Length: 370
Image 1 (cartoon, rainbow, N blue to C red):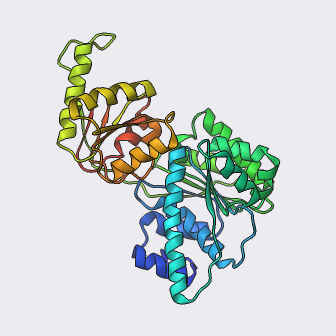
Image 2 (image 1 turned 45 degrees about the vertical axis):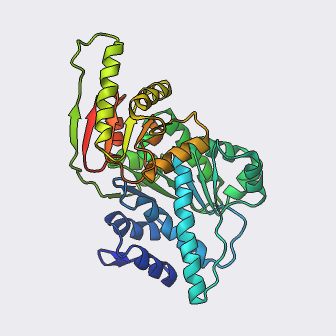
Image 3 (image 1 turned 180 degrees about the vertical axis):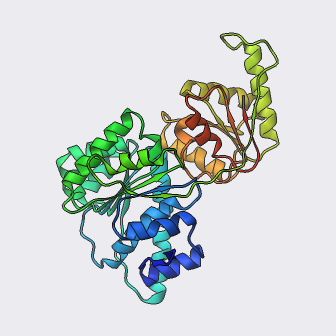
């Protein structure tokens, strides 16, 4: 596997698994791997579904699998701005590891055990304690949990062995207080690490992308290598406004008309996500739409819900078991929920970038904005 004549020296096991599983690399992978393999800080900017996560992880996984015996320390830290996204990545890492282990057995090759664990606000206490006794080789965490881990003495010991940090959906935090908090944690992790810490960022296409790269690299460091695989998607966008006169506060009649419109659109699509701006609206809109579509045909999704409830909603949407999910920003990033036919956004988004991120979850089809 190479890029523009640059051959990336993956192990034969990784190479044969990848070619059997995927065939050829995506543009993001082909352009990103040479820089990552060379140890350079790298920012990959590409749309959802372009293979960014595997582009970031595969070289590190190859190194871990080649190592023979692995020490009880964390080698790779993956930081996700969403707890649900971290769980999704763990699931998508476990499958390749299982497939690689099966392929190794068939080839008579012995592989070391690579432990992947999630540490977030959802992680039960007994799993947190087990993590300090037997650290994961790949740690999946959130910015807030990373801060806590960098403060506790026991977790600082196993984080000192980190050689790679991957920041997913970095554009989502780069411009707010959460991003400033994460920037401090990245510097603390780099100072704690016994050796050089390679930084890999994954971003949606942003302009200017150089600003995101500077955030990833940190102050006083060279600008990371930028791999920008941007492209324009064709979206069918429309704006729907009730026929009733508009005022400072929407009337019951206007809300009823909106619910009827969304329910009608949902009936003509297999899967739909309806985004709203607050958790309170999630409950209100999902209840009103369930009254129109029927019991069990609408599920809610927001950050205050229990982890099990959120995962159940994601799985049911992904497998087509429920036609409609009403969500806040908890579903706007790269969580794998499969193909989504239609995205509706109720009310004005807080920012244009937020709207683009949310409607970008849809596949071919109309994207109304009531």
